[in-house]
Image (cartoon, rainbow over all chains, first blue to last red; front, side, top):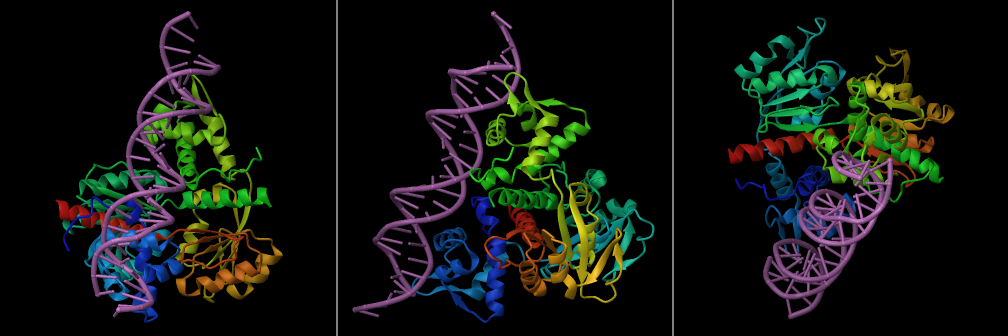
Length: 214
Length: 214
DNA sequence: TAGATTGTTAATCGATTAACAATC
DNA sequence: TAGATTGTTAATCGATTAACAATC
């Protein structure tokens, strides 16, 4: 249970959240047992890939039976680190910051929001879900004093690197970045990007391609 | 210029927006010429991969010189379909929908927002950037009558499939989906997902892994 | 011309799929 | 026991990297 998975490729890791989501859906539908073949039909990966993927983490299945949905769901949750709580702050309390603060999976899976930060004096002092919006000048001190692990950047891209520097100096462990730039961080800090515009451009590419073919 | 790129792998396509972004930054810094080696140092792909990638679309470079930044930027923009305008609607006018409506690259790269839609009577009738929020009951008719190409789903996941069905019946061409589910659509409709929680779970995985090793 | 750097082929590496023995 | 399905090895496929001739 405390093995590390440094040998498992990121291609596999990036599929885990999708397994987790489908297994949750199955549990909600009171399906307690599933074979790689049935799961394949639902999730769209090949049965072979599913067995291969799951085996990177241990033998969760049983020959002749399949996988126990509840057990597998929990195991994948544990692998993803969802069995514990994370302390977080959101920097940028505009629409995006507020959307994240209220995002159901964010709240549900143990991401504890300790504060939001903004430059806008109209926002500072307000609350979102009972959580204060502070002046961004207080960010560094707050993160240090409250041992915040995750900083969530929902600011305009122009100030994202400055915010990052502040967070890093205050011993943040990871950054969830929504600004459309690649942040420079010391090598022991983990950055996960949500580059929304890249996804939009892929959509426009695909639409454009399709219109050429039709 | 009207070739289609069906033969180019999605791995390559998904790197294009990043090239596009870095080339824009270079242009803004008044850098007009770059070699694959220099670009490699900036963007973090190997020089070999950069040359390989760009060559899928034609010989944009010049031996002994490198690439013309402005030309390459424009070409990649064209390949991504950013040389034309798309008509869009946003379904779900909460924080996320409003964040998208105001998102700078969205506005800048030709994605014309024609309307937002919501069930909440407090929101219906309001405006975001001079664009009306309509009742979601009007969605189908509006999309059909205004020849909307892209539907952007910013609703809770519980209603995302219903919205999708409405959009598809109204001849939408593509869907940009922010709800954490996999939408079922007829095969000629393009869906591009932004599965925000998957990214969050990867961050939590990486943080958890790191804490095991330290 | 000499130097630089691309375009492109060949080699390597990694990820996915197929196959099947092990076993519940 | 017979049927089902995993775990796992081997085969295939695709993507990345290396190398270098072409050429500006």
